[in-house]
Length: 374
Image (cartoon, rainbow, N blue to C red; front, side, top):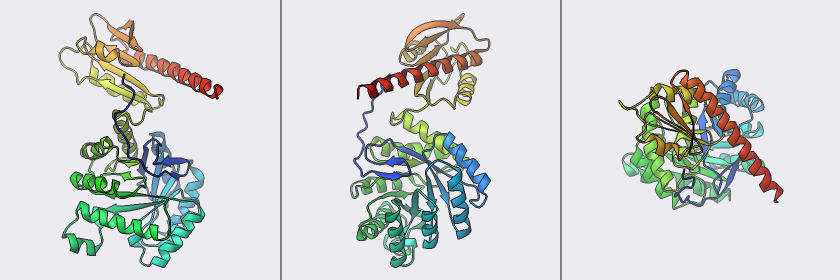
């Protein structure tokens, strides 16, 4: 199957969030955010681990008080994924979590009342090599901007972002990324497209407050998909009123569909019709659930009949085409063996896992050869 991408990504400055590069030629990183009480250390650590297992490269944690800053410090010691601390208003919290090992500070410089306090945060971030994210949200624009534009607009968000960029520029701090999020797709897309022409720093993409699992996924896919197709975006967070684990899963599905990341199984499946020779929907749902732990990149096609099945299977690592009296399994695009409907899901799971293990060994061998060649 086509393995390249026609997307030409915007060139941006690279920053490091812990051990994860953001911007430059680095892969687009996936983020999510905890929704537990940060003061509940055990619950927050458990959720961070689940979010990481779902594929998040970076996790954000809200730190609204000094008590929760101390809890953040304990959490930092118990997980190994880079953590971003979400800070508003109190610069002392930012200074404290910086000392406790935060990997990135999410602040809105305009929310810090005095420039001298912002200067302290910048100095601390510079000393400890901690990047900053400027987070602009259509729902929390400054009163003067709302008076100027009458309502939240893309132009107002970009002006807010550039004011904050200018503050960091004033103190020659360049290791930052910027987001200009709105719940309105058109506003967010227009703001990101404008901002992408004004700065060289990485852009953190998101459609904020997008909605529930289904509606929020659709809105995010439309808005962020448009930007990603433009080559805009260096890290993404899907904002859903759902389990944060689902945010990471949706982000990965989005990036896989655009061939921007290739981790885990990319399922190709028909919607099913009266031609199907097995229950496609229940089979695919079961396989997606059972095979979430596989990380090696694979295309798996599950097609219920012989009309489109062979064509898709020939372009997949593993393919199944429905047939009578038996279905046909393809490996690397070549017909390999037949399989009946009895215990179909169990047999497919075992065979896909075997194919994944073989592919993983092959990729490891190829990597060793590249290293050996110097």
